[in-house]
Amino acid sequence: MQEVIKVESLTFRYSPEEPLIENLSFSVYEGEFFCVVGPNGAGKSTLLKLLLGFLRPKAGKIFLFGKELSQFNEWEKIGYVPQRFSVERFWTGTVEELLRKVAKKEKVGWIIAFLHLENLLKKQFVKLSGGEQQKVLLALALTKNPSLLILDEPMTGLDIHAQEHIEHVLKEISKDRTVVVVSHDLGFVMRNASRMLCLGMPECSVVYPKDFGQIIRELYGLH
Amino acid sequence: MDFINTLGFVYEGVLAGLLIALSCSMVGVYLLMRRLSMLGAGISHSAFGGIAIAFLLGLEPTLFTLFYVALISVLLQFLMDSKRLPSDTILSLFFSLGTALAVIVSAMKENLSANIYSYLFGSLLAVSKEELYVSLFVFLITALAFWLKYDQLFLVLFNEEIAKLKGINTTLINYLFVLLAGMNIVLSIKVAGLLLSASFVALPSMTALLVAGSFFQTFLLSAILSLLSVFLGVVVSLTFNIPPGGAIVMLMVLFFILCFLLYAYKARKRF
Image (cartoon, rainbow over all chains, first blue to last red; front, side, top):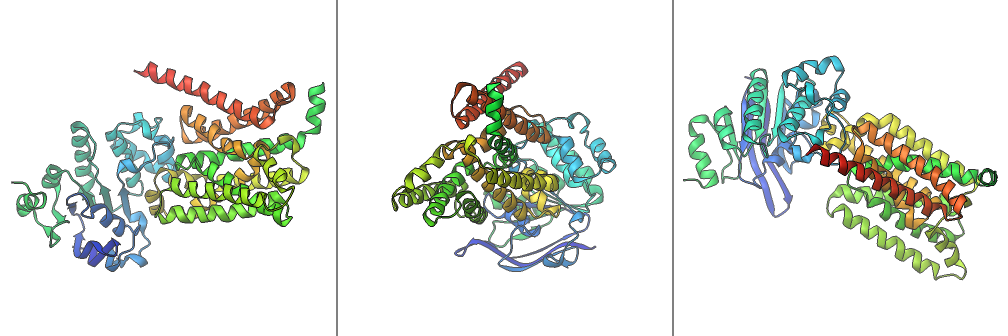
């Protein structure tokens, strides 16, 4: 299987005395549903920012689709869904404006139908419910039909119905692409992840489904 | 008839006011969506320092201050980008520095303070032909930047990370529009005075944000409200013999209150 993401001996720190990520190595393979878990401050979102080139590592290498990050320029292969709270609440754009700005009309038709966005098109993004906003962010990430989808905390702040809906959509989407999700929702991770990366443990490690329960209990101090 | 005759004498100021208001209304929306509405006050007070230096060195104040503020704007964006301090703190620092500089410089030479302090209140009616040309030039650059970069700006304001992944140079966009904001704020000092210039940037865009139904509508409404405020402000000013800057800003506040009431009424009806 092709390595979609390969991380070698990655180290990152915001301040010299406190390394947030140290000597981390892992790979994500084509078609995986790969989850990143860990307590607050373990470096989950920072890891995504490093993978996407928003932050520069202090040491180590990142490869995307076999190319070193500094050489990688096929960003249309990657769809990114940021935390929905990162969208400025004074932003007044509508869903329709947003989708039209990133892709041609004929290219977003299938996404609008697939995510049932027809009734939301004329509405302003900031006035949508959490679940609706998450769907729009997903739609935005899917406009170029990416083979790798990266999501940062897609379930945070959603009610149970919206969570179920987004989970269902993600399952559908993951059938023909690689998905990497940072999530605090352990139920979601246990139900969907093909493997997970645990940050915040003395030895950050990639875990297979049979060990999910034990590792999560260790990680979060649950009994 | 008297009014039309008077208007003939001050058409340079009125035209400059309309051009500056229009471009301020556009950069205002950008600043507000980036939560940088304090930038207007920060830059106008920094410009106060620039005006003082220009008088001290015997240079043309508007042109010198434009260059001075262009440098300050780039420095401001650099400091905000470095994220070592919150934006509000950086803007407050420049606010204080500019004012202190003006106060010190104005005490250095006799007769200097009267010239420098005249910029506190400004006057649309005292705009010269040269200042009208400078306003037209800055308006054209601002309009061109918005026209060429509208789609990119749209995504940068939505989410910078998504914009970066779409290949947009977010750093360039932010430097460009903060620079344009700085230059427009300098020109609004001449029209409304330093004390009211930040209103040109903040008020129409704040009002538009309350009632606009889309991103495009926000820019359109902000522009319409700005033009209306300047035009009606000049009419009120000439009719009742009151300072135009004050009349224009009063109208901007009035529009804000009216739109806020409309917004509150609509919100109440929804629930």
